Amino acid sequence: AQKITQTQPGMFVQEKEAVTLDCTYDTSDPSYGLFWYKQPSSGEMIFLIYQGSYDQQNATEGRYSLNFQKARKSANLVISASQLGDSAMYFCAMSLANQAGTALIFGKGTTLSVSS
Amino acid sequence: EPEVTQTPSHQVTQMGQEVILRCVPISNHLYFYWYRQILGQKVEFLVSFYNNEISEKSEIFDDQFSVERPDGSNFTLKIRSTKLEDSAMYFCASSEGPPRNEQFFGPGTRLTVL
Image 1 (cartoon, each protein chain N blue to C red):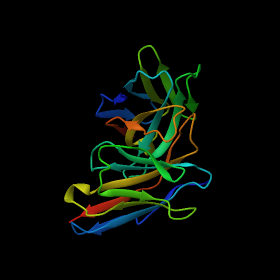
Image 2 (cartoon, rainbow over the protein chains, first blue to last red):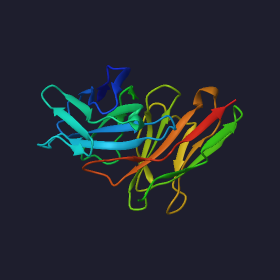
Image 3 (cartoon, chains in turn brown, orange):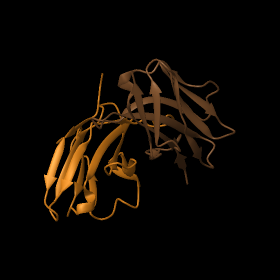
């Protein structure tokens, strides 16, 4: 069974600084995908970034990058140049790749607070 | 940009009543999902649906729940006899499918059972 662990209930960062949100995962399957979603206070789930288990390079999407360390089974999200609008809950998730209709398994989330 | 839509945004119902939550997935996506999030907790998988049948379901998805794709665009979640503990945000998601299985979520339906 797959498992996602996010050990930081809350993180605080100043505007314009970088912040790293931790995520570790557990699976015995060699083929999987890792995802980060943002949930602002309005409640919607916004897809941020994806990393495949066989991807050689770390994924990047604008100010978001994923620090993928396969041997350590970690997939940390790095947000560069934080903005006030980044204040939200962030969820790490994983699913098995190459399987039809497979579930996303979510971590408990990290609340990020950005101050000016 | 195409997006998943859900209606209603908020549903209030009495315990024991049936509710139907509606979703319109992204048009070229083939896989559809329902998740729920009890207030302050993590997002939990309920069910996935492909080719007009359930692909995978969790232990939460018991006989009180059912899903249907009644036409070419809608995807529905029915709860037959709601309980207080069904109060949650229900998210619909859709994806193109393997290999990335990147799922895009709708804005959610907040279900309140009184």
